[in-house]
Amino acid sequence: EGLIRFGPIIVDIILAYFKQEGDDDEISIVTMGDLTYGACCVDDYLAMSMGCDLIVHYAHSCLVPINQLSDKVKYLYVFLDIKFDLEHVIKCIKHNFNPEVHKIALASTIQFVASVHQVSRILKQDGYEITMPQSRPLSSAEVLGCTAPKLSDDVNTIIFICDGRFHLEALMIANPNVSAFRYDPYGKRLTRESYGFNDMFNQRMDAINKAVKVMKEGGTFGFVLGTLGRQGNEAVYDKMIERLRKHTKCKCLKVLMPEVIHDTLKAFDSIDIWVQIACPRLSIDWGAAFETPLLNPYEFAKSIKILLCNKDATETSQNYPMDFYAKFSQYDHTPNHVCNNNPQCDCLSLS
Image (cartoon, rainbow, N blue to C red; front, side, top):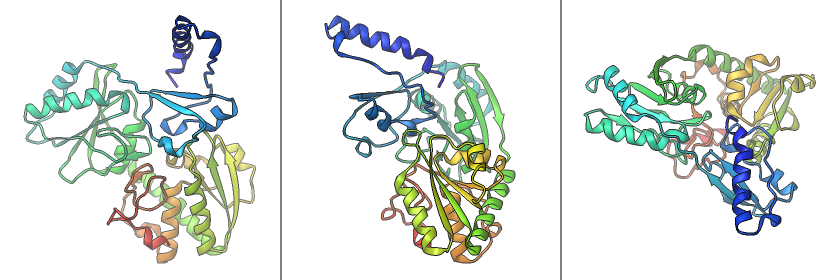
C-alpha cells in the first residue's frame, strides 16, 4: 500500500510512452484503489467488470498462477527489487554472530530477496553456514505472512531482512524455538525479535476445541469466502463445507465478504463458529477480538481431525504450520496442496 502514491506517476510514464508512439488516444488506465495486502489480492474479476484488457500488478510475486485466473485478461507482474547497503548488513552479521556457533537461516520479503542471495554468498565465503529456506512454490528465501517453511534442526538462528515484522512473524510461528533477529535495511538496525507463541497457540487451540464441541452438538457454522482479489479460494471453501456436512450434523451459512469485519460478523447472532477462507493471519492475529471463534482453514482441518480421532486439541504437540500457499502443506486445506507427492501428508485422516 505504501507504493500506491506512485500510481499516478507510473500512469504518466505509460501514457507518455504511448503518446510518443502516437497511440495515446487508444489507451485508458485505471488505478485500482482497493487494498492490495499481498500477491493473493490480484483482482481479475474487477478488471473484467471494468472492461480492462491488461492487469499490471506491481511489486508482488506471482503467487496465484496465471492459468488459474481469467483468460479474458492479460497479466503483467512488475517485480520490485530494492537495493540496500550490503556492506553494512554483512559487517553487522559478522560483528554479532559467530560462524562456529550460529547456524543461520537467512530470509526476507520478495523485494529484498535478490540482495539477500548476495549476502548469503559472501557470508558462505567467510565460513558461515547459511540456509536459504524455501516453501515451494515461493522463491528461495522468500517468506509470506501466511507461508513460511519449517527449518531443519541444525538451524539455530533466523536473520530476517525487512522493514516490518509481519512476514518475520510467520517464520517465527513456524519455528518457535529458533532465535530470531531482524535487520532493517532502511534504518540499518539489527534487533532481536520475540513472539508470544505459547499465548497464541493456547488461544487458537481453545478456539479449535470450541469448534469441535459445536461439531459434536450439531451447531451452526458460518463460512466466509474472502472476495478481495483472489484472497479467498473456492475449492478450499467448498471442500471444507463438504467435509463438515459429511462428518457432522451442523448447519452451514455461506457468506461472501471483501473484508472480514468484526461488526459485520457480530450481526449474525445465530452463528456458533466462523470459518474464514481469506487470510489465515486474520484468525491468528485478530481472532481473540471476535466474540464468536473465528477459525482459518488450518484450524478447521485440525478441528475435523480431532473430531474424528475423538481427542482434545491440548493433547497435540505445540506445532502450528504456516503453510497456506505451500505445495506440501500438512493437510489439504490449502490452494496448492499436492497429496500424491508428499509422504508426510495427513489428508487421509480427514477423508
